[in-house]
Image 1 (cartoon, each protein chain N blue to C red):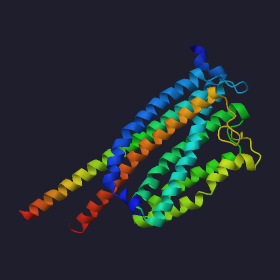
Image 2 (image 1 turned 90 degrees about the vertical axis):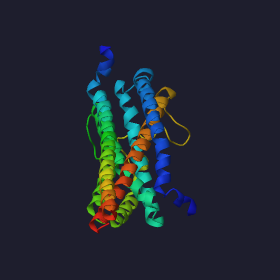
Image 3 (image 1 turned 180 degrees about the horizontal axis):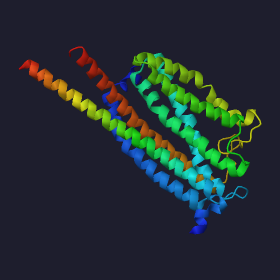
Image 4 (image 1 turned 30 degrees about the vertical axis):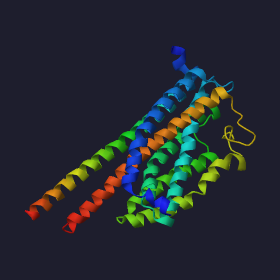
Length: 59
Length: 243
């Protein structure tokens, strides 16, 4: 197992390459999902407020 | 153009996106797992480069995606400029950060591969420099999209930048043939068939599928967010103008 992680002496290059790739892909996906959720909740709040003010003006 | 404009209807697009999105995520996770397993356990070490050659399985797909995302962005920009298709600008905007991330990864993993193989993290040769220019084009595109309050003007200016910058994509592709570079020439996609052994080609192609599925998945998430943001902007305008 130790031999596998040593990567024939290239561990210092192979593992950072894979670690960085995984990190960046997870980061971009996480930021994108977070942005979608935040924007959606802003929209829900705003449209809720406008519905309310519309109803108030009718009554 | 009637056919094209059918998809401009966000409801139709959102329905389609809801179907594709979970599949794209599933394909990404599945092919990513298979690709990683093959990259580390079935693919042999290179006879010259040893285990360091395993960096190829993230480096090459990332580099392909860096050009693919830009091509999508340029085509979407052209559609946005010529036909004013509402989803075109949305998809170009959504592509840019993903493409920038893949370009950064291509450069960083290439650097990590170059250090042990070439003895240097970086050289100013044609391939590396043109990919660095690509990263700057992505960053410039995103900066330009954010620089205007008026979305129509932002879309127009950044679409022109994306189209002008597209000249860099063939330069990247052929840089290894046109100039003497330290970077090795193409070995997978070339005339007369691939010169890479199937035991290395398969993990490479499967990782490429994984990256492409990741792109589709994140692109749809980002496009949905852009469409909701557009609705928020309209609601805010209504509020300001007294509904």
